[in-house]
Amino acid sequence: QVTLKESGPVLVKPTETLTLTCTVSGFSLSNARMGVSWIRQPPGKALEWLAHIFSNDEKSYSTSLKSRLTISKDTSKSQVVLTMTNMDPVDTATYYCARKPRADAFDIWGQGSMVTVSS
Amino acid sequence: EIVLTQSPGTLSLSPGERATLSCRASQSVSSSYLAWYQQKPGQAPRLLIYGASSRATGIPDRFSGSGSGTDFTLTISRLEPEDVAVYYCQQYGSSPTFGQGTKVEIK
Image (cartoon, rainbow over all chains, first blue to last red; front, side):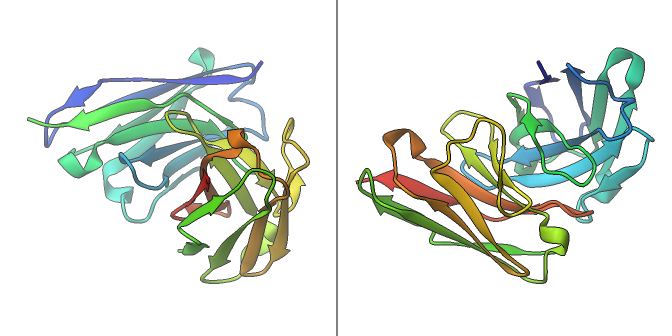
């Protein structure tokens, strides 16, 4: 059974750096076809794609947030990590990780991790 | 960046009726890399349709997708109470984007 689970802080202060971890099971991050994306959703609003990493360490980022994002993976731990710098209250959202096979849609999603940015 | 515009914003129908949801892209979506997701309240999105018209595993056949280029449609042939949700279209090319969603309600 393929699962993804997000973990990280529930509350961060403005200007701080957010670090989120996605732990996957049921597939390997070294599988040539597989990749993982991060997506976020502010309360009551639409989904927004943030970043993606493939098994060969190829990375891509949202154009509007590229300067603040870093995605990485630890294949031995089956984890994908997203960092977002200089957090602001508008970054308050549920952050999801999702599996994305190459040339395919986001087929399996994590349950999401709610992050509030407030002083 | 490809902008996806969904219509209508909200769809209110009776059980058993046909629901037709539209997704229009600002430029052609390559290789029909167009997907539809269902998101129920308090839940993560679930993949319904990929490649514009292929149903994902376990998705009932009352859900169907069609279209190509810049115009795509998700159809629910006979609406069930459990279909109440927000539906998002997405293009999953090199820089994925989502539409703003269509909320489906039961009258």
